[in-house]
Image (cartoon, rainbow, N blue to C red; front, side):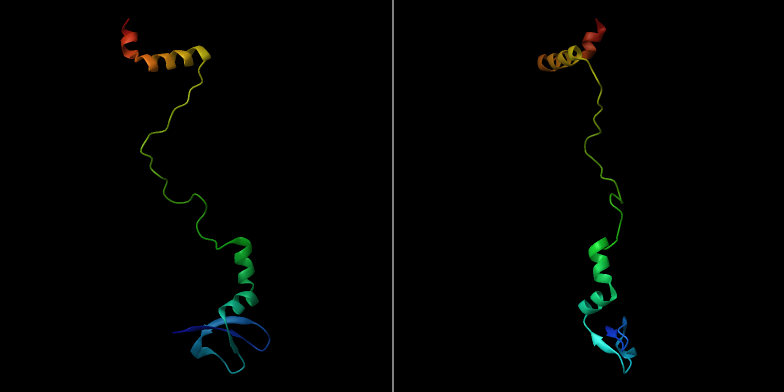
Length: 95
């Protein structure tokens, strides 16, 4: 079963089986068919269709999400000091 693109005497184009081509129809190339039918313009203008953007399975990350908290300048300075000097918060909480 081989499909071909045909153009009839009135200028209409279609895709048919090679065995179904009639006497008054002319076999044309795929490029000519796409141009005459308007499919080439449609694909150029709107794309190929397909899946929506961001559709499908969501990626799994190796690290969990980072939680962001708003802190004051003093709290931020204390956190950076604690990280630099190796302070353990659990030990400080016992005091």
